Each structure stands twice: as C-alpha cells, then as structure tokens.
Length: 441
Ligand SMILES: Cc1ncc(COP(=O)(O)O)c(C=O)c1O
Image (cartoon, rainbow, N blue to C red; front, top):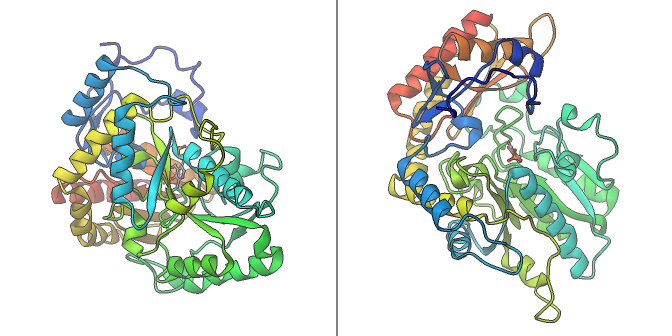
C-alpha cells in the first residue's frame, strides 16, 4: 500500500520544527493509526501519548469521522467560501457557537491555529478601526506564549527561537511576563496558588502605552507548547477585569485547550471567564482535516455589519475557510465528543492522570512536573552538553525503544493523550515514560 510504504528518499521533504539531519539519519516514521496507537511502516505499535500533536482528542481514525470525510469527498469536494456557502459550514458554526460561553456567537473559519490567531488579531485591530478608535493598534502577548507561526502570531508570541531570526515583525507589540516560577510553583497539580498578581503587569503596560493605543491582549489560558503552564488561580479573572477597566479586548488562544483538553469545551468555561474572542483549531476535527477558526462575541461581529448590503464587511478569509471536508469532519467529531462524553471523561480522569504523572517525581534528573486537565509536563535537567539534548534523546528513546510517542519542548517531556485513554493506558504511558527518563539520565 503506497500510504504505508517507507519512502526511499528522505531528502526532498524539509520537515517543520524538526531536526532534519538527525531525523534523516534515524527516521521516526509513522504509517498507520487507530484509536490510541500508531504503527511504524515495519508494523511496530506505539502508544500515542501526545494525541498526535495535541489534536487527536477523539482517538485515531475513528469510524464515524472517517466515514463523514469519505462521504463528503464523494458528495462535494470543494465549494468557494467567498460569496457562496456550504450547508455544513453553517451547521458547524452554529454548533460551535452553542458550545462557547456567553455571547461568543459568531464563528469565522480558517485552516490552522496560526491562521486563527492572525484572524483574531486582525479582527481586534479592525474592530477598533470601524468603531472610530483606529489608534488602538497595539497587541499584548505574553512571554513563553505560542500563537503559531504567522507574523502576527510570532509577534505576540513569546518563544525566542520562533522570533529572533525573523526581523521586526509587527511593530506595536508588548508582552506580559510568563506565569511560571519554579521556586513558587514546583510540582503543581492543576492551577498553582501563586502568580495571580502577574496579571497586574497589564496595568503597567497600560500606564506605559496608554489604553487608547491597545487593541487586545492575547493569551493561552494554559500555555501548552512551552511545556504545560497552567494559569495561576485567579489570574485569568484578573486579566479580564483589567481589560474591562481599560476597554481592551481579551483573546483566548484555545487551539490546545479547546475541545476537551481541560475537561470542558473551552477553558473559558473551566475558568468562568468570557473572552472577546476564542481561537480554536486542532480538536475541532480531532486532527483529521486541517481546520481552525475564531469565535467572536456578538458585539464584535455586529460592529462590522455596516454599510450597504452588497458590500463585503471584512476583507479577510482563506480559499479553504470552511472547507467541506473539514466541516464534515468537524460535525462528526463533535458528535463523537458528545456521544462518548469525552469532555466529562477528561474531567473524571484528571485526578487519576495527575497522580500517575506526578508519580515520576524523584526519578533521576526530574526537576519539575506539572499537570492540568489531560496534559502533563516533566522538566528534565539539561544535559551538560547544553539545553535540548536530553529532551531530544528522550523523544528518540521513546519512539525507538519504548514504543511511545510524546512531544518535547526543550528538555521538557509533554504528555497529552487522546481523551479516550483508558486507566490502564495511563499507567502504561507513565511506565514507559519512567523507562525513558531512566535511560537518558
Ligand atoms: C496555542 C496555540 N496557538 C496556535 C497554534 C498554531 O497552530 P497551527 O500549528 O495549527 O498553525 C498552536 C499550535 O500548537 C497552539 O498551541
């Protein structure tokens, strides 16, 4: 079968966020997937401890989702999203809006988290413009934040390697401090007690730049890519209050936290905080077909609905916005989440997951462990050679020797399994991770 066959030439493909040269020397190839597992082209079975890349929340190649995609491909492959509509796009938008809290009522579709972020940032600046406050152009992100790889996303993002060789990016940007402090928060389960005061830094940025220049603040409710940093208790609530006080829009980037990772459809629900926009991607289709998007509050949508009826209101969109395959996959995925109660399941598993992951405390080189929802991170002390080496070796060991797949962020091992994981498989994930940690110590 061509889909499973090992390629015989690895040179042409320039792999994203990958150490290309080491991969091509000892490839970590994945050729097939079902439920909680991947298979290598040679037929070796690996436990998926990462839900692919934070996205396969419903488990791999689930029949109802596969069938929906197949049927949609046969019925209508593509329809133009500009000036024409496909019925499933409206159905999916309606369902997503119904899942989102408050008056987050309008859904704009993109194809990835990066596009979702750039869409939200443009909407924020555009919103103030159409409201007659064009001076509000500044965007506030956060140190250690990850908002994808578009120029907007890396500008508000706070991970230095993703930014430093790419020039000036967006000009009017500033950053809140990261909320992680190992001395105060080491080995935290769930939201740490310490750190809500860090939201007050927004007051300092307002004092510096003036609220009249600030369009929006964007944060991940739980910073995933940098290595699972849960919001300190009260932090997001405080951020909302300060944004309200100064009329600043608050954007939650829920590309990872959306669709069950923290036990709710959105982290906004877990924390009882309603942002002005939510960015989503990944879990909406359980990773099967690329899709992302922005959910905007009614007031934001309404602000754009001006001018003559025939006029385009927002000059923004993608050829593949609301792609029929993605919409079909999204509807089928939401059905699976609902029928199998996967968000509630994540909520129930959270303490079991936390106990299991925290049991790794005390293993050689483990410097910190954090868990929140169905996510966990284990910080390993860096190798004497320098940062990143031990993490890389751990990922490589996991794939080649322990039949386990997880993500790394530097020397941090990041676990985020599909939400269908069984308790036995939680045990297996942690056992395999323990072997990896010992092997690379
Ligand atoms: C919070 C957040 N925003 C945006 C992105 C970018 O998403 P994509 O890789 O689909 O562009 C990611 C990806 O991990 C993410 O975690």
